[in-house]
Image 1 (cartoon, rainbow, N blue to C red):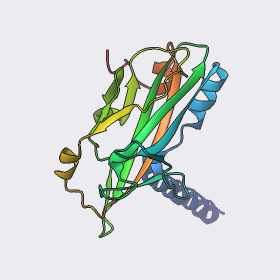
Image 2 (image 1 turned 60 degrees about the vertical axis):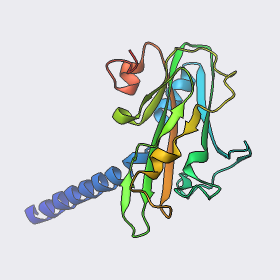
Image 3 (image 1 turned 30 degrees about the vertical axis):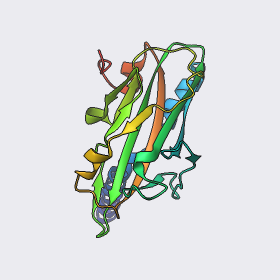
Length: 200
């Protein structure tokens, strides 16, 4: 009887270890459904429109993998070049709230080597604060009740020269997770788990 209990206990410990390992490997593109549900209950909703726009302004959709991650290229000649990335935030509601966009990038090199969360040289629109070095997020620096009139991408430019100086090769493939989150102004500490707003 004791041996059976020990075997069951050992099996449970192994399962917990496996779950922890899998969770850790997938954490970089983890979902925020709970945050979205809380926001909906609070009377507002937020989403991101993620697309590509080339130098001429022509827009196109980005291919996604089976997990919903956006597939992008390091090659400037490709249609899905990371430098053509655009993110439009659409926020609607009646409660004052803060908005942030999380961008997590995983690069796979031709030899199979994986590099996670390379800080990409994007430039962001006015009133957006780049805090990606600390939490991979870009924050809108004003509380907002109605945000639906914002009809342009938060990304305004991409520094191709700086990107080329990185060790990335043109054959590298990126998988990008974009998560937009909104929270009532008096609940950001509780929901986002931060003590203070980063731009203050």
